[in-house]
Length: 67
Image (cartoon, rainbow, N blue to C red; front, side, top):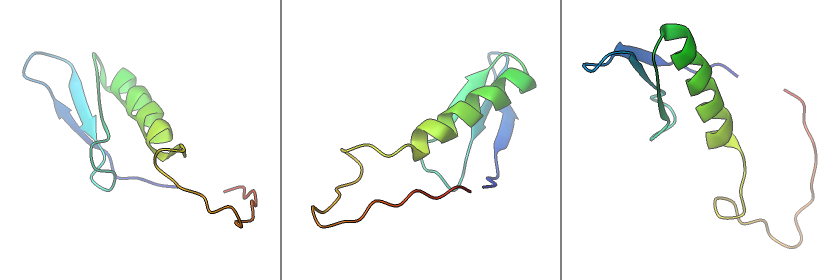
């Protein structure tokens, strides 16, 4: 999967990154590299299914896909 990441210098130093297609997916870092690493982790956590986010019906079938 590819995501557009907006990387901006922070006023207090370092950088802030956000993903427009994933509302609320934001991260920070001291360097561009650390910020990109942190936003990658944030994207993975954002996309990770949880019982609170996804209600799975009892009759649903589970299938694994590799992307």
